[in-house]
Length: 157
Image (cartoon, rainbow, N blue to C red):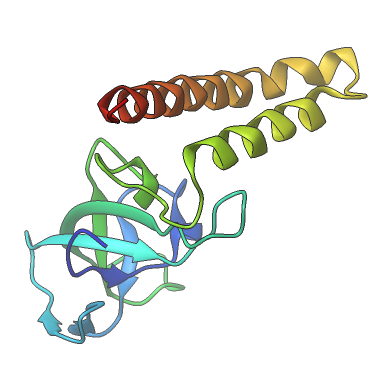
């Protein structure tokens, strides 16, 4: 990861802000450091996740700690986090992140295969729901092709 981060349940995303972080005043980050929560503390969050090819690709987010004491009689007082505008993203979205386990050509081939599978046999009403995924994949393919071309151009001969 790019820095020590506090483990967080990303299933909370989508709830009204602020979102639950901890009932305890101390949390442990990914490097084993004890972090004392307090109002206004900037926190970096993570949850282990995997990408399409079953490689580690943690979910990440950043935000600010707040104290929340609801009046609903159901939820007790707790430390919460107000996520910044970026929201959640994958570790692979960080600039310069590369999965060392797969070459650009292998990754491109896997992505082409995923695109093929995604559109085969899909009923017309459902095609719109995969449009954004395909656009994302194609953008990633363009990025990979550009990186591969730059690598090829730098090789002697």
